[in-house]
Length: 161
Image: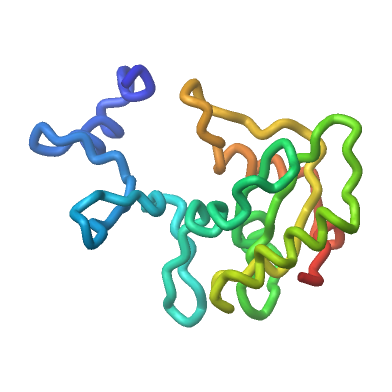
């Protein structure tokens, strides 16, 4: 809550009638258990009107042999570019000394094929810095997107998945 301490406007948006609105989205499964599947502020809306939650796609890549990764819409990283249709990008941070191998690429391709067409990643970007994180170790997506947007250009994305 320290993030909200000196920001009354943000506090008023987040705490409503005594309830903390976290922005987490979930659904109850058939056994009554709550399953979280994304965050409202991270939602990507496709041209076809479908809602995509990056966290949902990232679950498919759990266990990928890299240091860290996350999903972005390309137009979010580079808003000044026009890609025709929205392309999802897998941003990858390799382990120190690790190279992007054919086996890693094949693992990404196999996992990507498990996703419905509208959720498939269209390209990847190798990022050479650790992802910025909150005190609770969540990726600061907005900060990372800003860093990528400033330091990379569209030509650095490999679109071939």
